[in-house]
Image (cartoon, rainbow, N blue to C red; front, side):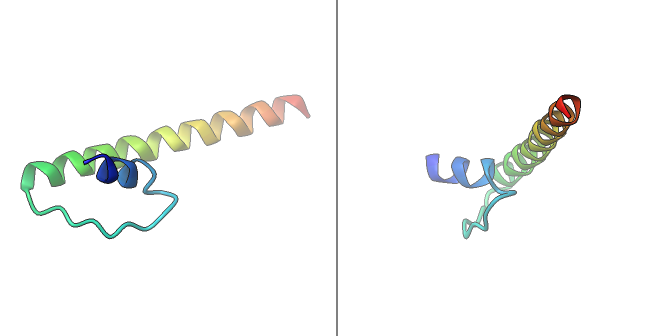
Length: 55
């Protein structure tokens, strides 16, 4: 289970080969992926904002 969480937590940075066959697990994986995407986007936007403020 830890392997699956790690793959989907960093899914914007790598390709995974895990298959989810249970409907509830697919839903949880989708929600986790969407949350991870927006979290990574927020971190990137804040980093760019901080760098732009320093220049």
